[in-house]
Length: 374
Image (tube, rainbow, N blue to C red):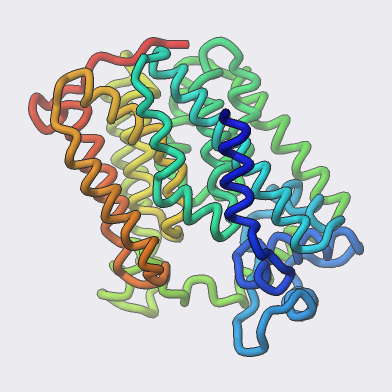
């Protein structure tokens, strides 16, 4: 039944798909990078990427889309270069749907296999749908994080290796990464660190094999691509634009302060740290103050929202707040509100507010009893 549902969703997403229609999605930047790697070229070269995207059907009036992920993410883009844009996107969406299903199944296990089916709401979560529509990386980040949550106790090496997927967009996890480093030291979880470093070394080795100058090419692209001049709907971006649009460092100040808060928050709770409670709160804060992020990146917050939903249900708290918030986000997506507008700036604070409410913090100042450990 689940497979049939996946095939149905895939059919909807790929109905009437052509190379030209693919060229309007963010995915085309990954395909172009993969194509460049397939031919031994620079995946971050503006002129070459422009030529490839134009050949796929991108209009002369549209801006080119560049893959801005670190070279550690090239292992995901490289296979796409072996296919046409249409075939590549179809395979990408199939892999994304499979990753989403695994992620939701793991979250269900983390919840203790409840009779309720709240985890299935993840299929209708607006950032998930936005991620699928754009052909973005977000669902793979989600998979990496939930595998970490599932394996960190019993198979730490695999837990660390799974974090490589999160490293494809590290700016979304700055506060969380700060806490993770401190936790590894305090718990002497060096097998987890070894797993991450092994996976990272493998991805770097592949990137070097595919493009020996990948890091230099990436640095040049980021310095000349105008990424920080884009109207990204994040609190950090609007904080900078409000105070001084030319002071780029202001965009990183909220994340820096959040990292300092995370150090205090972890250290004061290090004896009773729980990744399924305090860790999820840090994740939400990290996403809220990220210096660069989009609505579809919020798919990685699903563990916090679904675990919060189950806790609120168990505590007989009203569930209408998450319904209202999720419905508003879904309505914006359905109404095709442009992702670059400020109308999405409210979502990350809203998800954080929901988790605080769902976990009982707004009532007693204390978290609910932790979920079963795995």
